[in-house]
Length: 196
Image (cartoon, rainbow, N blue to C red; front, side, top):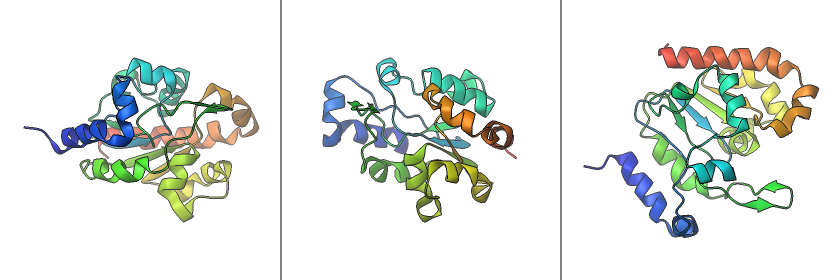
């Protein structure tokens, strides 16, 4: 008997807007199980992640797991982390980097998936797309200001800059992120994983 999460996945694969991905043999890149304690909402999978069938399977993922203070086994355990990007498929290449996630994608699927995760204790919003969607009017005018104001969203939500190696200039200009936000993030993650 299919679970609700299995049914939702089948609907995502079958949806007409995802026919191109189905034809290419791509699976939707997200993972969730009813026991998940942390929802990690990112942007959209990169090309390497889509081709490997594993989200955050790149240098950004290595850095993200270091920020979170978890190992690969913990990160990829859907009963600990629900990995739910703003689009479950690689959106393709644009003029300056990857294209953005499709605007209507999260609205179709996210709330249905999240409704199946009753034990969530923490939501991590990685990047501007996730922050604008989930924080709405509570988001600040820029990603930097939103992340700088992280304490306003605690204890249930924390915004992060994207961990891409391409963001090294941002991190060098904003040393407070590693000093303040990362330790807070690790503490929140440890608490959620411990069930406290």
